[in-house]
Every structure is written in C-alpha cells, then in structure tokens.
Length: 164
Ligand code: PNS
Image 1: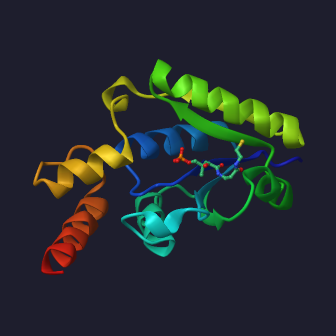
Image 2 (image 1 turned 90 degrees about the horizontal axis):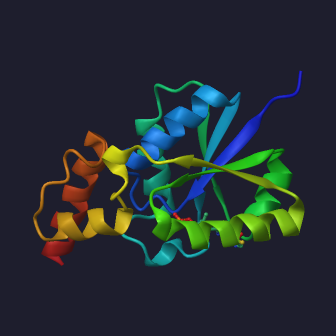
C-alpha cells in the first residue's frame, strides 16, 4: 500500500495554536505528516531551529502519525528526498493567497509537487508568529494563542533578553 506522506512546512518561530490546528487536521486526512522547519533563514529568529523543533515535538506528541524534521535549501528537494507527495499549508485570509499561490505554482513547476490548502479555523485566522512575538514582548497575554509549553518558552526567552 502506498503511504500518503505530506509535509507541513513553515518557520514556526514559534508554533501557534493555528499551526497546531492545521497539523492536527492534516493528520486525520493523511497517513503521515512531517512538520518541517525551514532552516535557511532561521539565524534571525527568536528561537533556534532546535528550539522550534523541540516545541513542535512537544505539542504534537499526542499525534502518532506526525513527526518533526528540518530542511535547508529548496522545499521541493526535501520533498523529493523524503518521498513527500504533497505540501499542506493553511490559508488564513485573502492576504495569504497571493504569496501562497506563487509558492505553490513555483513548487509544482520545479518538481511537480502538489500543494493542498486548508482554510484556517476562524478562531485562529488572525494568528501569526510575528504577532505573537510582538504581543509577548510588550507584556500581552498570549495564553489562548499558543500551546502552554510555547508560552513558557516565550516568557523564558524574553526574561533572558531583558537581562541582556
Ligand atoms: O512560515 P513561513 O515563513 O510561511 O515558511 C516559509 C517556508 C519555509 C515554507 C518557505 O520559505 C520555503 O519553502 N522556503 C524554502 C526555500 C524554497 O523552497 N523556496 C522556493 C519557494 S517557491
């Protein structure tokens, strides 16, 4: 039997409840889901790639067909190497559409890899990692927007930064 293995790629700096919702729903539809953290530009983020992976592993621990990996270079090369048949992405709003469509069409053109879009849960359609970082940095409450382990790590990172 052919295994339907899909990839959920992203920066995940950090993973939000919106990401987890998409990952969970993708896991009900496909045999295997690999959450892949893009490491090309990760140096400039709030969390290292290893920290992002650790958070993702923690929050997806209850999903047996979900694993977490990293990739460098082109996403389509990673997909070919790992036997990934499609990329799954969440679409939050019309503002996501142009960028996501461009990437989906380019990835298809480069390697014939399909992209499947799932509409975001309206509860999370305004959620984006950069907003989480900003709200947390200014003392806002992000407890309903990210999983508890992520909130804890955000607090810890901000405390480290405040100490210089
Ligand atoms: O969370 P993001 O920022 O939307 O994730 C973007 C990511 C990592 C999925 C995207 O930047 C990516 O695929 N980068 C790898 C480089 C690549 O394949 N570029 C060509 C895309 S057409």
